[in-house]
Image (tube, rainbow, N blue to C red; front, side, top):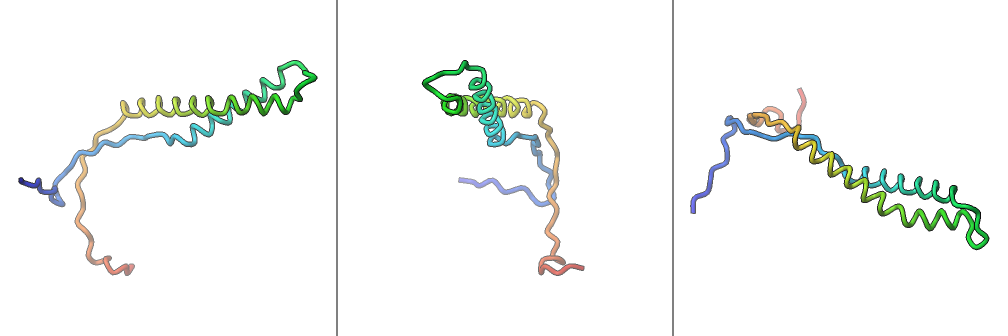
Length: 107
């Protein structure tokens, strides 16, 4: 069994650089869009003697938050796929460690 040596400190390597979206903010934005949609549905529904408008809003909010978050995740996934197409490959060389600053002293 032979182990492959790690690249020397002066040897160039290829790295792929791309911008990737964060999924959680997209899911939160989708959930908020679901709540706004629930508010619109609650305000559009005709008045009802059985249920108040706030009850209707709560019902629609529960139903719309999860699909909204899912839609936000799908949007993030599509943007992530698009970012892989625009990725760049760079040639980098690692620099040797600077021993003069190893003690934490600043000049």
